Image (cartoon, rainbow, N blue to C red):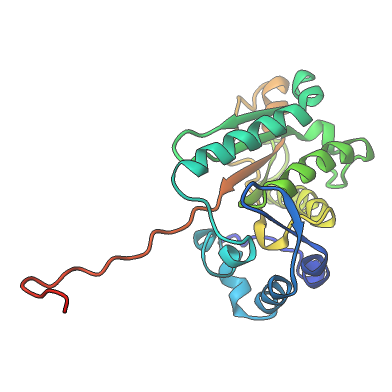
Amino acid sequence: MRRPFIVIPLISSLLIAGCATNDLGDPRELNKTEQGALIGAAGGAVLGAVINKKNRGKGALIGAIGGGLAGRAVGHYMDKQQKDLELQLQPEIQRGEITLDKRAADNALLVRMTSSTGFDNLSAVLKPGYLATLDKISRVLNQYGKTTVTVIGHTDSLGTHADNQALSEQRARAVLDHFASQKVNALRLDAYGRGETEPRADNATEAGRQLNRRVELWVVPVVEEKPATSPSTPGVTGA
């Protein structure tokens, strides 16, 4: 079972220096209560639940971002975030280095980045020229704080399965680490490597392998859960 990577040594300092958002998604400084809540979460078992993919959008994460989204606000919020990403990343999109799509079912955004622009062959060190692109993404992620961000690394099928798995994990973590360094809230982040197991194209051709060597970002809205309603008791009325 693969576990998400989280930048544990950086969490305390990042949470103190981090930003929250107002209801419109605009960044603001964390107040002392929010800082205390985040630091407390980072120090105990709550953090383990928050960074678990199945538990995102609950508990400490909801508190950390000032509440989740609800109703029609979800689609509007993610539409606006998509437009801002497209505006910031227009040069990269035009060059074919990045694609950006929205999933209708849950309003999640999928940002695909070609690894050839971000990493040298067989390397997990981000190229200096690519940091500016990640910085632009970081600014948008900080502006829209009511989302979680999962970084997923992929490789082609050349080499061994074990080597490809390790490389995909290292590349995903490199991107996550950079986001964290740009004050993207660490509680919103996790990263996985999928190795060669989820190809987009045919690995038999170089063109296909280039498409398969990629890093993906899943930007998912944090949706406020509806409170459970207690069933009424037949024949009983209020006083």
